Length: 464
Ligand SMILES: Cc1ncc(COP(=O)(O)O)c(C=O)c1O
Image (cartoon, rainbow, N blue to C red; front, top):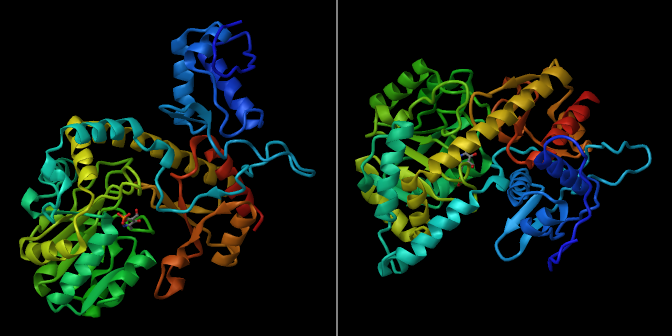
């Protein structure tokens, strides 16, 4: 018995093995089975340690592990609680207790989303606290439309170090994610008399529409070596918008000859290249390839974002600006208003303290493990399916050459409670260029439901 005032918890640990592991497993199983429901507050580590006769460190470590896996949440002031959507679906007739359908009903394997459970709460909170305590008063007023110099300085050095980008802090513009960067670029290119932008096909529909609001947008096909520069030349485009590190959504990385060809196109035509480096930080099997920008900083607008690295909730983006575009882009950003200066300072602080690098290292390891699990599951469960684009990023392309149609594949996945996107959703031109394919994001399901999500996907597709 304890004299603790907090909640009590009935938990039986098996009498063998590591106490920490046993505690983790007992908690997982109580949550999975629905005995501990979402929102339930658990005893403090001190109380539970004393109830179970364990050391406090053992309980703290078990709680931390389960928070990292998404079973629990930990907030200052409200304690450790059972996370939402963690229980398995109740057993229904005709279904086994191991049914992969989560209590929330669906598994999200759509691309473009990072693991929200892995948001670096502690590092972000530390950086924010520091900013609020230490920031000079002028931070709370109007600032430089290009963004805080602290972040631009930190980014210039970080991007040079990790992506080979050559930029002076004065030529960086901080904005609200890549999407705003593209909108500002569309404005500025129009002002400069550009009429046609060549954009990769496939690409994100929202990005295409954003440009199409101001410019003619030519669909430039992508093959196994990346954007087809011959087609770009034929299109008469004056701007090329592309994702050289990891094409979205095909996942190919632009081949060296293609990179050189694209630079030649820019030189021959005084063309601009917009390099969307949306997930360049996540490369797994080989060394990262330096950003294309490093080879022609005068013609390439390099853009990046925290949407994949930290999360869309922060959505800070940056543009490394060729000198000729700096003035009009700064003016466009001034009209659009400055992007959240306090968050900018927090990110600068995270980069300076090494917290951003540490976070990325952890995420890279976790995503690589998830990718390996996906590849292994598909190889053993769906031997006819080819998995493409897995060297980098947070998504893979599953090609199903023998499937009747993409629609049938998406429906089969949906019937198994899995949300995925068909490749066709991103295509504008000839859809027959690629076999029926799914674009599968592997970052989103929390760690505890990821195996079940893959299991559901594979069972769904096997029914085809
Ligand atoms: C191809 C591509 N570009 C850019 C981004 C980032 O956009 P934003 O910074 O506006 O969230 C994403 C999504 O994260 C993406 O998938």
